[in-house]
Amino acid sequence: MQHQSLVTDRKDFEKYLFAKSLTSVEDQKNEYYIPSSDYVEKTCVFTNPENREDTTPQGMSFGSLCTVILRSPGTKKPLEDLYLKYTKDKKMSGDNEINEDRFEVQVKSKVADRNNRPLLDKLFQVYQECSENNWDGYDAQLISKKAYFEAEKLIRLLPSHIKEPEIVPEPTGEIALEWYQGKRFTFVISVGGNNLITYAGLFGSTSKAHGTEYFGAEVPAMIIEKIQRLFERAK
Amino acid sequence: MDKNISHSEDLTRYILNHHYIRSNKTVRWNALIPNRDGETSVYRITGISDTEIFEIGEMFVANLIGKPLLGRTDIGVLKIFKQRLNVRPEPSPHPRHANIYGWPDERSEQRLIAMELAAEAQLHLVDNSG
Image (cartoon, rainbow over the protein chains, first blue to last red):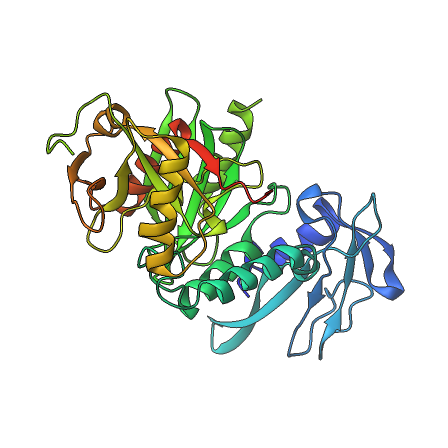
């Protein structure tokens, strides 16, 4: 599972938790509201392997795994898994060595996975149907495990506000996600297990685009922009 | 068949896999993506009836390959040329067989061209009602 970084150190984390976005509503249960629609319906887990100082947020017991459930203000459903990743950043002050803790808070969409379950089931079905060469009668290449797993990763990383695509096998052995809004309003992204996303889109009668982007820990922003552009143009 | 393919001819691509047909009964771009040799197999259909076109598909495509014929998608040669592709006759296994060639190497560009063609193509499904 890939994570989306939210904040990168403890100061940012505390700021994030208390001053900016989160409001503790049930401190003893470690439950918070997160007033951002981006993280709706997600469960948050904070981990810290070592003792914390007295700046520890109220209601969080560091020293071992600490679970904090963030709930959306509207639905009260749990928000995305939030990992507090601990790293030790040693700094020298005079003759003494001071251990300064640094944190990285990351998001992982546990609940979003459940929301994507039907799409992941469809992906598996496509994979099964196209896991042998010549699945289309025209010498199509089989869908490889690498392509399947990369498509699964791609689906899991799609933002929850993006409309569900169709899963489309390609005779090249790649798996595509297709958003179809009409004959000349179609956008497709494909993966083949080589850390690349290729895309192609028709955004009306005169506008079109195609290209390739590196696929690492997240879906490239320009891909998301193009999906959104499709729906804006098709209105 | 004439060895030269005219601008005014129509071509068809027979469809043997349901992933090439959308639920709204339109053809998907992936039906037209070229094979490993960089060609898309088609048939020249100008001057023959709908029944004859499907008969060729059954006998010379579906039966040979061993998969059921689901339908076909028709497109004019002119639209192929507009995408800077070419068509050449390959009269085996049938005198009307041809191949679209000249596809770019880049996958994303192939896909875009296939999307353009699919947007112009007409899907005809096999009638299984009777």
